[in-house]
Every structure is written in C-alpha cells, then in structure tokens.
Image (cartoon, rainbow, N blue to C red; front, side):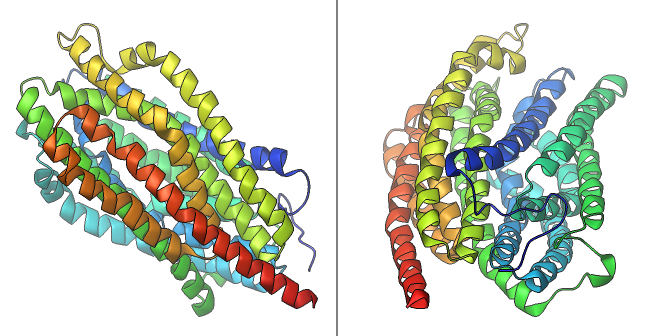
Length: 468
C-alpha cells in the first residue's frame, strides 16, 4: 500500500478502536451540534420578533426543506465513501479524481435543488395543510433558505472530503465560526431591521457562504492527496459512477425519511387544526420540541458519518478482522452517547422549552406541554435511531448503499405509512403519532443486521482467497 502523506491526512486503520472512534466522531458531533444550535437560534431569535406564529412557521417547513435540499446533499455520502475507500486502498490517482469530481457534482446538484425547491415549496406547504395564518411566513422562510442550496451543497461536499481523509476537526472549526456569524446576523436582521423569518433565513444563507468559501479554499491549500486544484475540476466517469452508485441511494434515503416526516407533519397539522386551531398550540409545541430533540438526533447522526468513513477505509484496505471489531464498537459507542446526552437534555427540558415558549404568552403552558410530550417519545428512543444510523453507515461504507436504502424504505418509510393509516388512524392522538418513531426504528435496525453479516462473510471469504 502506498504511503499516505500530506498535512492533516491520515488513515484510521491503526490504533485503539474505541478511542479512535471517539476522537474521530467527537468533532463531527460537535460540528453537527453547532449546526443544530444555530438552527435553534433561528427559532429562538425569531420568537422575539413579535410575530406570534414565527416559530411555528419555521417548524412547519422543516420536513419539506429536508426533502427538497437534503436529497441532493445526501449524495455527498457517495463522495465520502469513494474518497475514503480510495485512501484505504492506497490509490492516489483515484483519490484525486474522486475529489475533483465531487466538488462540481455538489455545485450542480445544489442548483438543481434551488430550482426544484423554489417551484415546489408553496404548493407542498399547502398540501401539508399548513394554516393560512402561517403559510405565508413558512413560504418566505423556505424560499430564502432554498436560495442558498448551491453553497449549502458545496459546504457539505467539501466537508465530506475532509472527513473521508480522516480530518473531522477542520469542518468543526469552520462551522463554529460561520455558525457564530449566523447568530450575530440573526440578531442584526431581527433586532436592528425589524425582520422576522426572512431575516433568520438570510442569516443562514450568508453563514453557508462563509463555510463554503472557507472549506473550499482550505482544500486548495492542502498538500496531500485531497488537494483541490481548479484546473483539474472535472467529472471523471468512473469516479462519478461510483459516487452516484453510493450517493443516489443515500439521497433517496434522505428523501424517504423527509417524506415520511412530512406525512407526520401533516398529521400534526390535522391534530392542531382540530384541537388548537386558534393558538396553534400543538404545532408550536411540536416545533419547539423538535428543535430541542434535534440536538440528540444529530449526536446519533454523527456516528452515521463516522461509520461511513471508518468502515470505508477499512473495507478499502480489506482489513476484515479489524473491521469486525470496528462494527461492534460503533454500536457500543453510539448507545453510550445516547444514554449520556439524552438524559441531560431530558433533565433540562423545562429551561430549554422556556427558551422557545415565552412566559408572557397566554398559551405558554399548553405549548410547553405539547413540546414535552414530543421530547419524551423521541429522546427516549434515540438509541434506536443511533443503531439504525450505524447500520446504514456500515453498509454504505462497504459500498452497499442500495441495500441500506431498500431496507430503510421498507422498515422506516413504508412502516410509517402503515402505522399512520392503521394504528394512528384508529386512535388519532399525539402519543400514538409519536410512537411511530421507535416502532419503525427498531424494525429497521433488525433489518440491517443480516445484510451486514452477509457482507462481512463475503469480505472474509475474499480476504482468505487472496491469502491462499
């Protein structure tokens, strides 16, 4: 295997596995927590704008934005895996081609997301049953947010390259600074200019511009295999096919998850319109609870990102014995993180909810109650979410992205539709609605296991064949 050189460039093939996973995953976790914090700041600051439905308006379009944007960003998982596998295999040329293919693909997909999103956002919000007194605010926020899709995609693809080469700290530093700019701009637009949802959406776009420029320039200054040289930017056929083979199923999985969440969002609006149509208490409470439990979900998702890279490098190196230990340890570390993090958030639920629900609001107690219901259901089951993410990451790291997507489509998206049309339809209340999450997560977790076992056995036979 060729030596891998260059500043901040490393493999993950050596050293203790438990501490190695923690060292690699922690910066990813902190990066994603910062992103969640800045998204939460959008809702907290806009709540001070004087617009009573601003928080609910942002929450109402969350699932739609995930569908319209993350499906394109999700393809970045393909870039992560292909770069990681090429590094693990010691193939410098393939690594360079993958890097210079990933960046233009990310920008092109970003513009595709912009066009599709701008055309679809208001019709989709109407289809979800969004209230007339909220839909205008939601559409304004969504339109500005989606305008930043190209730089958002560029940020994610550049960050994927950094993580693929074993550097999860650089994206953390960049997101920390750009996210702080986001918070400052939130206050500036809302407090100084009297804006509301339009101000926080604009702040988000500008902070993504900072991230995209910083990460891209950083790659251009690298001295290793992943150095970005503008004159080499080109969509290389073989690397493009490999990225799409892994990335498209990942994007589809992002779409199915967002689409199923849109169905849940529609059900929430149905309950809201039948029980609290005047003050939108259920929707506002759900939006606040969702923003808080999102911190736990991104912790769980950080281990998906770690799994893709860690498994990708080991699979590229055909290191069966160590990969087997890596897979087990990924589950262990994820469950430990869930217990520690979710417990703290639940203990602090009352002061956290008070950041979103102001005491001066005459409906504050009712909104807080609905936020708390969501938090108990979601945070209590996020260990299952983490195990599901790890299972998906392991399969994608081994190049079996289509398998991971098929399982998630059946176990998560498909079963959610079944649950909503049967159990929830028979007993339409919030508890029965939120139960859809743990039920479908555990089905998907169990679905991944036999396919991981099969892929590992196939790798074992391949390695033994090479030795023989």
